[in-house]
Length: 120
Image 1 (tube, rainbow, N blue to C red):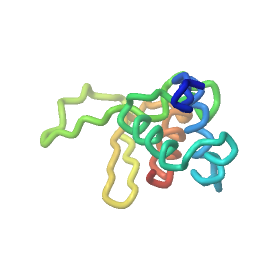
Image 2: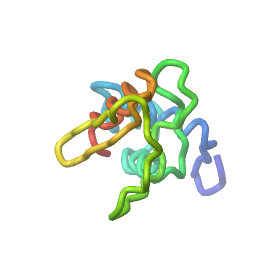
Image 3: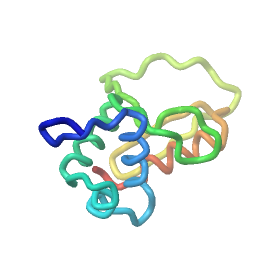
């Protein structure tokens, strides 16, 4: 704790706390109370995670990828190398994610799980 009364949270601790808010049924308010922080501070950390400036631990399996990553939106789709399998499309409301047909099932499940998460 500093003279101003503010605590400094290491990025890995922030990431673990934010990850707790992503669990099914978790609320930002309840997690914030458990750690003695303000809910608006925890929401700010969640925004950092959504923009890729705070890397969260994997929430499923042994995946080494972060949960959130920056998203690049283009008007044109870049050319895709042909795959032996037809592409896989994940649809959620107006969001369409197209994956190579040979994408591993655990990766597809992780993306589908992330798409189904409640917005921050």
